Image 1 (cartoon, rainbow, N blue to C red):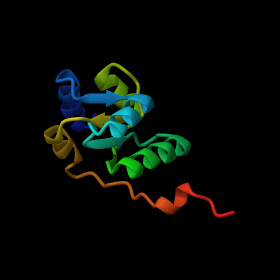
Image 2 (image 1 turned 45 degrees about the vertical axis):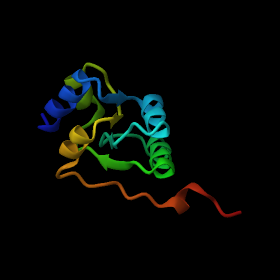
Image 3 (image 1 turned 30 degrees about the vertical axis):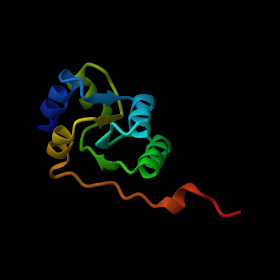
Image 4 (image 1 turned 90 degrees about the vertical axis):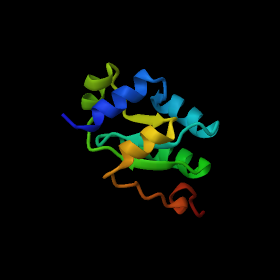
Length: 111
């Protein structure tokens, strides 16, 4: 099991974690998300949607080296994306993780 799951679990118990696509997008929109983390097996379509939200609202996106099942076993709810609303938790969890590159041109098609 990944060592980050303990930190993510503490963040949830502190009430500083948004789980799931809708809650994460809402926390990005209202400015409370400090960082967003996506599961390793998150679908490409969903990843593109969350990348758009992060790019639009200026939130860093990181790829966790955990699957949705691993996140679910640690948190009690299977999810592919989480947002931390506390900067201390977000910085600690982001250590050693690679940020996801977001290219703004991928969201707009040229016709």
